[in-house]
Length: 317
Ligand SMILES: NC(=O)c1ccc[n+]([C@@H]2O[C@H](COP(=O)([O-])OP(=O)(O)OC[C@H]3O[C@@H](n4cnc5c(N)ncnc54)[C@H](OP(=O)(O)O)[C@@H]3O)[C@@H](O)[C@H]2O)c1
Image 1 (cartoon, protein in one colour):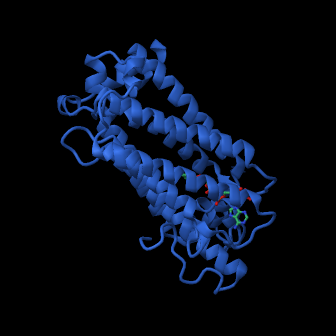
Image 2 (cartoon, helix red, strand yellow):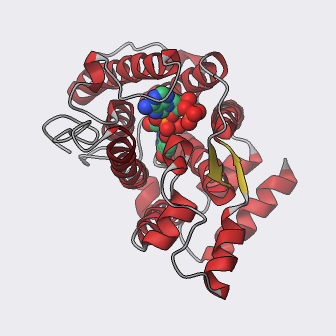
């Protein structure tokens, strides 16, 4: 464990940043990179589009073959099955378990990260109850998605670019830290025990509102995944959740991360900015994917198939 702690310390030192800032920067850079790759059609079709959508984007058929397009085509062949999504959730569940052990024992990897926080970030710290609630919610999300990935899997030839897969693993490992990092100040000075699982005081209004929001969004997303799994072939979804919305499961994911960012707000703040950066990455990534999904439905099933449909959340986007 000391080896991991040492490596983490070296990486944080190399960034020259406070650990909270380094994590926020990771999410913002990841969102900016995804956005940049989405702008030129030649990059978007080769590297960004994944899953069912990757079948009708003209990938691998550039209009004017050149050395550059040949190289891009070659790089774009480094793909892994879409079903590798399950590995994201294995990483998420393992990371939740790892950080639970670290936080309860104030382990060396936790210390390596927490000691690299500025005084300001240490002083504006989430409470232990708050940190624990957020950890439980993220662990539930990872476990549900892992269970769905295993039970709702169906034969498919759809794929994603390997960098997409790497970024996904990085995202879930980073989020395992993001969920508690703004509680470091309290975790360094007070012992986290199982007694903190018991809620003796009435929850704050934001917890009272946002935890049910998280649970409702999780339930709706589960219904969407079950419905998509039940489809025998690619088709325009005809489920109440999909009525007029191309990707309601992506919308639900955005609500899940936004509610986490609100539940985890440190005292005196409206939102947890690290988890807000995480939400921004999720919203950018899924917004772009929902856009290509709408385009895919239009190409495959005709221009009226999803005309006027919202991308992720009815009435909002
Ligand atoms: N946190 C994040 O940054 C992040 C990023 C990406 C995804 N996610 C979440 O992970 C979940 C899954 O995402 P995804 O991008 O893999 O979803 P997806 O592309 O919609 O695919 C989900 C499953 O449904 C199938 N499917 C999709 N559209 C279909 C259609 N029209 N007809 C029949 N089957 C269809 C897919 O088949 P194939 O297997 O053949 O493709 C796949 O098995 C989502 O809820 C999403 O919010 C989160």
